Length: 138
Length: 177
Image 1 (cartoon, each protein chain N blue to C red):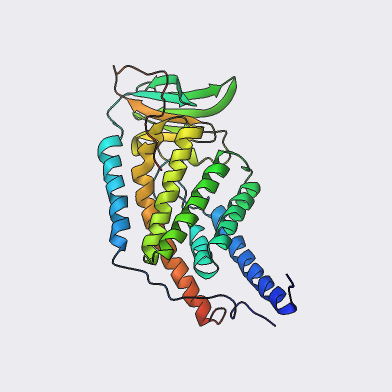
Image 2: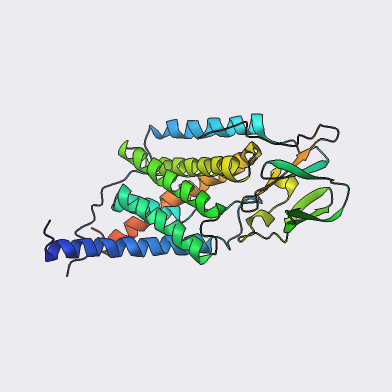
């Protein structure tokens, strides 16, 4: 009988190499840039809900309660505003990953299957109706 | 080309080994959906099934690892009802880019942990890029990058340790020499 033992080449791997530092530096640099340049403000009071890149709803974090988010007459999710924070509840997406965490914990809530992104804006800031891509990486 | 009994047996043995590892990757991919995430971030998932892809890359090669990545994402998405949905394309983009990047770095003799951590980094970047450009239509998705990449680095470290330990264990019990 022929087993896998004699047919899989198993070379010796090293967990660490000196040159690895280069890869860690690239990651570190990227994270630092993201944190200092792109981290969202959490001091705002207005929640913007964009569907497929277009702002469709805005709510105040003082206006507590459940808000229904719809697109073309179809319910996408409910938003629960409480204690000056917001979370997604009852999302119609398959995995409900977007229901994890609150807006103030992460700075942004994203539901990819429903094409929804929720951010905080400072009160009084002009609300852009479209939110076009201004950053492309990778 | 004539394929003799021995060649056929060799390819069957490899195929069986690849199938078992791929099934394990699918099972881990589905199981991790019910494990609470380490950070309360919407959309975040662990990536422990990548430990199996790394193992396949180490033992069988790039072609087999890419094949396993395609099968893993396809089967897991069929079983969870999200086949051809956005998460399917994000998973496929992330897995393929990660395997491809890890194979390049392995050829250049980087350490296993750095290979896995950077593979996770590339996978996260590709997924965020796809989400921003194709699905959500907003670069604000990158607000999540700090969290996701930091936790991805931890997962990448654990994946490399798991893959390394897994292969060591397979050698100890005599599956591999």
